[in-house]
Length: 54
Image (cartoon, rainbow, N blue to C red; front, side):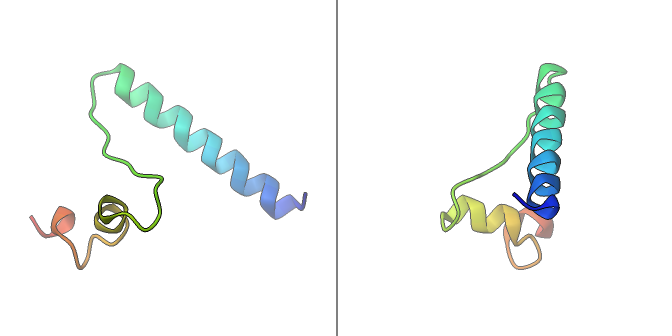
């Protein structure tokens, strides 16, 4: 595994840990790991979709 791949995995683990910590504090986090789904597109393309438009 390259250093880049290790870094990407580390960032992903850190992000997951941060989201879990926020959820424990009562913050609701909207997320999607299902690429190609409508929800994933809305979350990851906020300029053209409703989340950032509101």
